[in-house]
Structures are given as structure tokens and as C-alpha cells.
Amino acid sequence: MTRAVSPAIARCELTHLARTAIDVHQAGAQHRQYEEALRGLGCRVVSLPAEPDLPDSVFIEDAAVALDELAVITRPGAASRRGETAAVAAALAPLRPLAFIEEPGTLDGGDVLRLGQRLFVGHSGRSNESGVAQLRALVAPYGYTVTAVPVSGCLHLKSAVTQVGEDAVLVHPGWLDPAVLGPVAVVAVAPDEPHAANGLLVGGRLLYPASFPRTRARLESRGVTVVPVDVSELQKAEGAVTCCSLVFTTSA
Ligand code: CIR
Image (cartoon, rainbow, N blue to C red):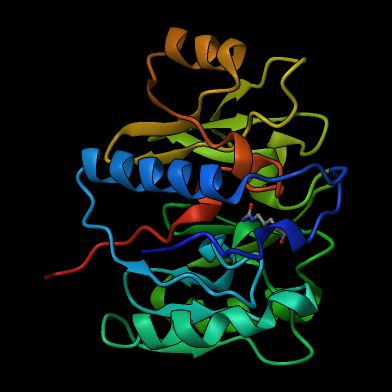
């Protein structure tokens, strides 16, 4: 599930990046190529319409955590993004039972890393203790554990770490100590590519920004099959590849 780029994306939230001009048409074109790359990886893409009043709505990952058994609709940490969840909930309702993070909890999907039945949640500027506790209570009945992990220097946990293989993660070690994840193979980003830890693993292949060639070489030398995609305009909005979709299985 994706959501088209908002014509208001230039008014996006920015936390760690300076604002630079975003070419909305280019961002839209890159987003369509991203959707095409997802199709190439075997996905059926359901694209929700653009939202002129929700600048960050293309980053649909933050609005929900889609598990096999249920979808948890988040309460995003940035107030400007709270209006994003209603349409995502409506689109997911036919596909999954829904549960909701309630006030005072905040949770961004970008802070939730799933490794099998283990969910790690970044204690970031966007996700708070109540959000983590609510998520834990909602998913525990299905056998998931939820562990809060400290993350610093970046927006979300998945800015610092993403899964790149069955038992392997890609990490920026300055933003997250990978030891908190337990025993798992670790690939570190190239030191001059700090934003390179975000890749989207789909069916054993990694959708990955074209702008990080040195980290890509590290991944390929470890046997990861990389599918590059140019998301340069979306990166100016502090987005990357996981945040532009919710990936889940359906029976349809
Ligand atoms: C924000 O600050 O919320 C957006 N400009 C970027 C969100 C990116 N989301 C993600 O990586 N999961």
C-alpha cells in the first residue's frame, strides 16, 4: 500500500535536515518508479490518493504497523501528521482487524522494526513509552515481543537499522548499538553515507536508494541482491524507502 506524493510536500516536517527545494513533479515521478519497483518485486500496489493538506502523507509507513494478524493504526508523534491515519485505517479495514494507539501514546511506524516475532521500537522523538506499551499489549496475544531500544541522532529507528536478509541487518552504528537486537549478522553503512541504513526487503531482494553506492557495494559483497531506486526528492523530506509503503501479505 502506498500513498501518492502530496502537492504540499514542500511543507513537510524536517528534524535533522535543512530545508531545500523539493520538485513536486520529480518527487511524484520517483514515487511512481518506486511503485513500479515494488511491482517488479512481486507486490500488488494499492495506491491511496494524494492528500493536498497532509504534506508528509506519502510516508505511509508511519501511519500503521501491518502484521499478518492485525494492523495497528498509529498516533504519529508529529501533530501535523495525525490526520494521515484515518484514510489508512479505512483502506486497511477490509484487509485486517484494526487496533489503535490512543492518546497519550505516540508511535510512528518508522520506529518499528520487525525481525520475525520480535518487534523493536525506537525510543525516538516520535514514539513514546505509552505508545510502546500500547503496542506491546496489542500484539502480545499473537506471540510478538516488543522491545524499546534507544536511538539517537536520527529521525526513526529504521533510519538507523533495517533488515537486509533473513538474519542480517544494515546499521548505522553511531545511531544504534546493534547489540540491542540480539544475535544477528550486522552490515555497517559506509562511514560517508550516514543515511544509508534504510532498505526495504521484499521477497529476499532489497529495494535500496541509488544514492549510496559504497554501502550498496558492502551489501552486495555480503550476498544481498540490491534493487536500486532513485528517491532523491523524497530524501529531501527526510524520507527513504521503507517509509513510502506498507508491505504485507493478503489472501486476495
Ligand atoms: C517526517 O518528518 O515525519 C517526514 N518528513 C519524514 C518521515 C519519514 N518516515 C520514515 O522514515 N518512516
